[in-house]
Image (cartoon, rainbow, N blue to C red):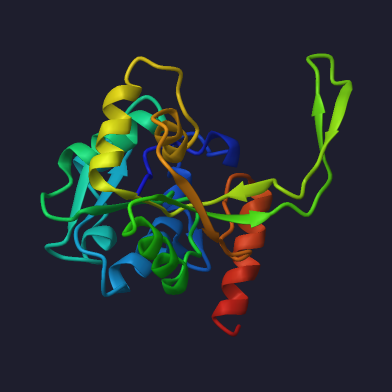
Length: 225
């Protein structure tokens, strides 16, 4: 569970909590993100990567979610570094690893099932949804270069699923290379098969203040409020 960022785009107030600890309908976003994995019967140990100051003194509500199963470790300078830190402390045993962003608090059991099923076949599993908007490529001056056919374009989500050895190798070889925006991209560089699975329109990524408003509305719908 990648939660090592500081939520700059969400306009974190000076001295305030990082984005992942802010509440959505009274529940910290990180807690909402972790819950589906705690509840899933096939998920074992859970590693949560937090900003260093939070890793040193994790919130009590977090540690109470999965006593004995949850490990906390500090994040790094980049998302890629944070995931590598998480891999380093992952207990031995699991052959499949899921990497999820705490900024996506609405993953659910069926989505996790789909990702695990593909990863168990030896491929990297990436949930994704089709693009609804027209996509255009622009140059440095903001001028449109071309309209990109969207039929084969998708928006990628997490959790992403990996054979453990594949993920470990991808991160080892990715050190010193240009940073990747997700872990599947590191695996693509190795020539590993990356397979799309059906994502979820509800699997919102909360990045800006406007996204928090959408998350509040979605949580209200799910809770029948």
